[in-house]
Length: 537
Image 1 (tube, rainbow, N blue to C red):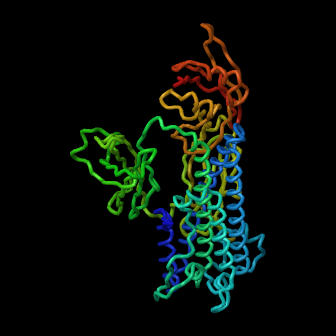
Image 2: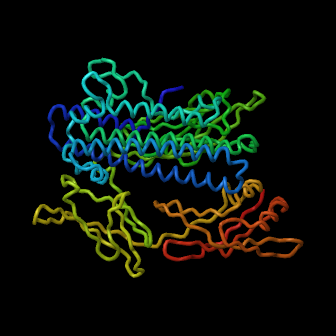
Image 3: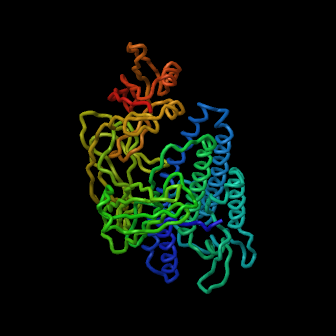
């Protein structure tokens, strides 16, 4: 199986870790330790985002299972096993982290669970972590070896959930058998390479990075199982060009990596790609000025070096060509994508927003250069309250309709001395109503069988809203025409009723379905949303 490919973000974190460790060995100022806090905060933020993404995937799986338990059951039960295996390993890794913090900082384990990395007093200690994770000199009996064995066992158990013939195409990472070398080129095992004489701050960051890799493995396995639901009865009706970037958010010096392919992929094909920068839509007139790339095994890899790029959003468009089955001319499909280049900065882990929404928890990150988190104080003026939660700081209880903005004031406190560091004004708005549609609808058209396979209305926040909230449809009306007469069918949930599904099953092609009187439950109250129509294909 191919080796695990790290994303640019992971490479950046790994490189920063190595540089910081080298500097600490030279007794550089303790401000260097604060940089580990920034990296760790970024890793933890990525973990939160990944957890939400995995939860959505499991929700979709559960919905499919409720609609067809006989067909979906074998895949669904394996996805639940993958979730349990992943959570068990994450719980174990967290327990090792908390025990290590407690041992090194000489505090109870319960206190270690709620202590931020910035507040750990002995985060530059490396002797005690080495002893705990590796063991005595030459012994190799530390907790790190138990962790390595559990990771290896987890990988075996996760891959056993996938049919044997398909395991080779699934790389879930978490490699522990690489050719690891120290600075003297002496061979090391995985535990020594990661934890020998590494400071506590680095160990905590590494633990959280491993947790992210576990979540990534869970997502890959569950996604593969989800695809298996309809693999046997899937019928190709069209071919679309797809572009799959590893990340659209990059730091200067990173590389933009993406795969462009034709779905479904023919591994025996050698496609070609033409692309041009600073265009959001492909036009054949761009051919003369475009960059041409040759591919293999059904896809083409695109690589952009960003070292000389200014921080900005970059767009590009192109086309991918694949030979027709008869071996004749190429068939072309267009694609477009974009990515952001950001400056490396100590603020990369900060949550920056200029809008809070009423009735929901709004995450906010508060930091100040040179001020430890333990000495930061804050208040909110106008409405609401700032509360510390397990997920971080949250602005809660924004309810006053008359309040259009609030101000967060930040202070530092050292004994009796209190200093104002600054303030930030945030607009306060109602969360906008969701867009309502049905799954796989494109340009107002949906395939009949797709609608019957996913018989429910979806709520999606507009793309411009950088926030997550799950609206729920509480009722709607579907208007139909039968024997020349109009009928309205009522539903009191997101799901189509049996009468509605029966009508869709027998309706002619190009029949128009109109959904009206749609009501959704919002964060504060129920609200009505605009009607929409969809044509059956």
